[in-house]
Amino acid sequence: MRAIVIGVGGVGQVVASELVKGNYLKKLVLADIFTDHANELAKEYQKKTNAEIIIKQVNASSLKEVESALQGVDVVIHSGLPDNNFTVMEACINTRTNYIDMAAASPEGLKEQLSWNDRFRQAGILGIMGLGCDPGFANIAARYGVDELDTVESISIRDGDNSKVDYDGFCAYFSPQTAIEECLAKPNYWTHKKGIQYYSTPFANKDEFEFPEPIGWMDCYNVEHEEPVTIGDTIGRQKGCKYVDFKYALHPDFVNTLQVLSYLGLDSREEINVKGSTVAPIDVVVKTMPKPADLAGKIHGYSAIGALVTGTKDGKKKELFIYTMANHDEVYQHSGFQATVWQTGVPPVAAVDMMAAGLLRETGCIPPELIEPAPILERIKARGMDWDIIEKTAPIYKAKNEELTNA
Image (cartoon, rainbow, N blue to C red; front, top):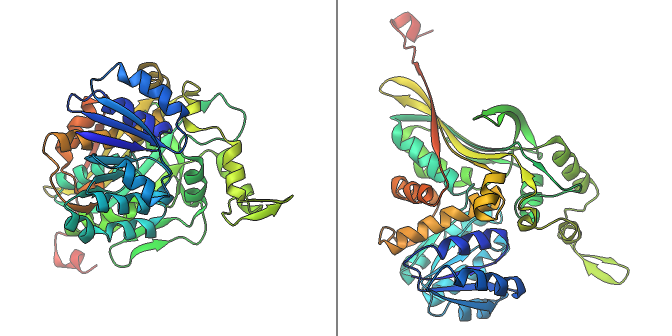
């Protein structure tokens, strides 16, 4: 298997560090617009593999540069900005290279990516859209839960983190630009009658959700995300699912900071002139924030991501929460990464494991929930990312006579 990682930031480093553990790896290309750090990483990774490791300077927004980098490669893991997804996808079609990314630029962007299904099939390649942790593991967890039930009422994706960070300023544990933009966008959700809908304002519909210990109860907000775009239609509707959403546990300070940024217009991509220089306000904000990779070893606490699937099994009400949990300090000790980027980087490598084993032969563009859950969950666990299930059951109260039925 010959692989290329485009975007060697925090998540890309996790992907590369996991790929070199695979005996099937013959060639690994580390591609980024800045190559200094990639060169350092290559020296470290070369000690762990007999595969050839190559560094290439690539601007992921340049179709020509990406196509050149993909020559002689079987699969690309795009861990750079979602803004460049379509450029990389176009290059994959032209070079007949399989494609995996970890996030879309927006719900509409994900729909557009999936609409390339026929083009990918004609090229004889597979594209997996949004295979990180959430989206990614969360979709697969939802599929696992749906498969376990006879009927499904709702699918709720939940992301909670109770950690503290040794940093005094504003920061995000994953791509700062993505974190700002998705949290300040109008949150989306899905219903069986109307499909994708949106709340009118960010940080909508706050409630408390009980994550497994030691995280416990946390305030969660509806946030724009990829999972509701697909899982209602792909795996939910066939079993009667009526509602799908995504909620993110956010600290009040984080919410307040984002609201101030929005109020001041500092989340805008529209370029402005500042003392003779043209800049986008959001780029200035992101530049002042630490890179997620630089927070490794500075975050202390737990991160949990999972899917709460409610429905029935054998005539009884059932709730399944299928989740993964990681301790930031423990992850740092065994991998050198903070838990959030590590949890995002492991699932796409598990998919590459399946490709190498001949277990992912499909062509076209698919969301993660269309991957058979058992084989990929097995490989995710084999790479150290454990997962578990919390189950609650209760009887369904059925009407016992016509009067109750008509009540």
